[in-house]
Image 1: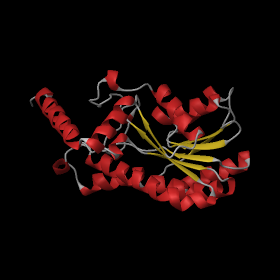
Image 2: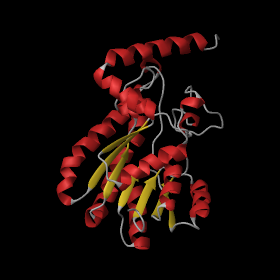
Image 3: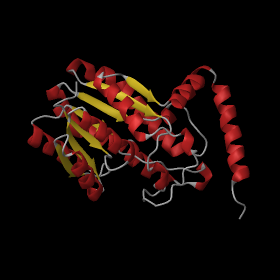
Length: 269
């Protein structure tokens, strides 16, 4: 049961993070909403305030000490921190020969070291509460795809971290849950390789293939509530992981066909 539990959500200003916060509010959790965009957080807190106790804290997971401030605020306001959801992240896309080292460094700084900063900031409180660490991975952490090598690298690293932390933290009563969503409706396609937000969604994933964020949030919160080791979110994600494990040649062939189709559909300049 999550009622009365205090839960930190990084990257809570939009997409999966905001949807998870809404679902947690329905379960009666105390929420600590953390992200860079304070106005977005304030609007979400106002929306959820009638159903849950909500604390807003402006956080940048690429800055040392930022998440620690949110954890301290959570313990000060609610007395404990029971669950920390390391959700903040974005996607750097493009072919390796069109990207540079700085693109990969920027990706890993947020998606890997940002997760580690959240782990280190939250871990003392989670040990005291015998709580739960939730890491936001991706189906891309199981199934690599062309044009996504920085993002795939980052999510493979998060998956490896989660696998290692299971055994390390279990004796101290801290659970670790890895969440691996597939295509979900979010703003990830509106964020460019520099981490800047745009009005236009540049994602090439068809809308019909993307799971609504509220539906994904229900599955995510169910996995958190039952302290599952890992949850793959979306049917196509589960299929992709299954086939990559058991028939990787089939997934690779499909990826090649998809890449050719995108090249044919690309406008000629």
